[in-house]
Amino acid sequence: MPQIQLQKRVLNGRGRVLLYGSGTSAGKWYYKEKVEGQRRYKEKQLFGASSLEQAIEIAPEAAIELAKEPEKKPNYRYASDPLTLIQREEKLLKQKEKLAKRNY
Image 1: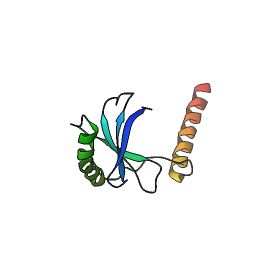
Image 2 (image 1 turned 180 degrees about the vertical axis):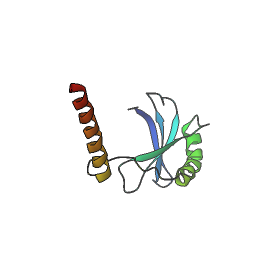
Image 3 (image 1 turned 90 degrees about the horizontal axis):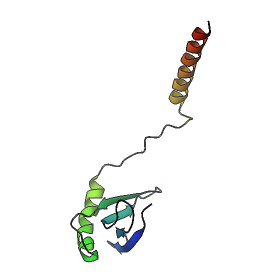
Image 4 (image 1 turned 135 degrees about the horizontal axis):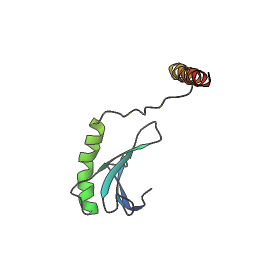
């Protein structure tokens, strides 16, 4: 996880402008805000920002772009999903049949 070198709250506390100090994002400015009701964040790189003041000026545009983006829903398949369980069972049965045919 990259380290944050510098950060500042913007837009009345809605989000933060930050500069990463390590990792692949080292030296790049980002706008970051928490997704309401979830335990995750959305962030957008602030292209053209080379100082804190420039990043603060570009932050409202990034916030608008993040708000326009469609919500990305995680594509998780839970073990309690009946279709997933049925598909797993069918796969196991096919594998057992193949093994039984090989042994004869």
